[in-house]
Length: 286
Image (cartoon, rainbow, N blue to C red; front, top):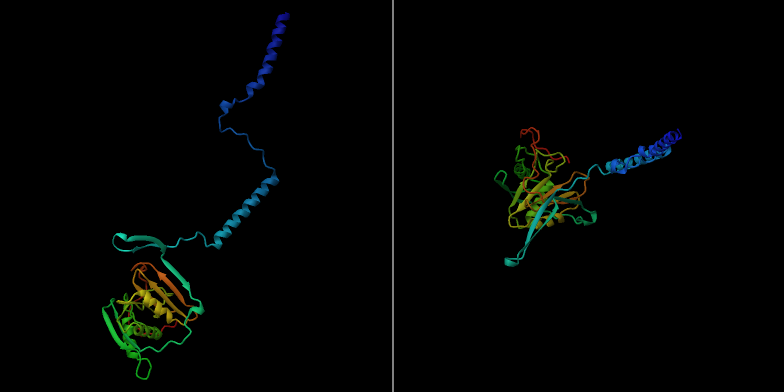
């Protein structure tokens, strides 16, 4: 009887001792993903963290808005040049921005009055395979309307055939360029462009793209710059081989640029403007 009582007591004690151990999960069974749960944040800490995240998000949004959203990458073109000759020739290439433009400080513009040109212009255009040799002045010094009309015809839009009366100041600059380079024939690459955006000076018949056979476009560009007393746009197109000369809209400052885009790269879809040449030519208003 005493032995049975002792046995029952021992069994009861053994169960009590091993029960807590049996409830624990062995480390090997828990696995590497089992991590202790962090203590819950107090309500005040949660509110503070949420407010901080909101401020950070707001600053990022403001920065994007100020910068105009995602920053666009400027188009670049590959330019290569060769130095030396024969076995010592070395070719080097670099990538440059396709378009590089800048305004002109007033101090760098011409201050002296422009000399009166001879008025003589020898112009031809490959767009229509036509040429004109005229003098824009009469003997009394006034503009010769017939000569201006002949030049306007050569300046007509190559896409639509539309004609406009070109800003006569542009013809005077054309004559000065002709005088400076010995009266050589000037090639008109582009004049008035009816199928063009309204912001273009070509659309307003106050711009021309030109070149002279046997004369570098850098020489032409430098001389055209010397004619600017304010309000002119002058660009150089090294890959297309011409310079651009225009008169800006009234009040607009002078501007300079270099455009490395190749021939035809700027041509887009034709505008939905109705072509025709029935309307009389009008002087540009801007």
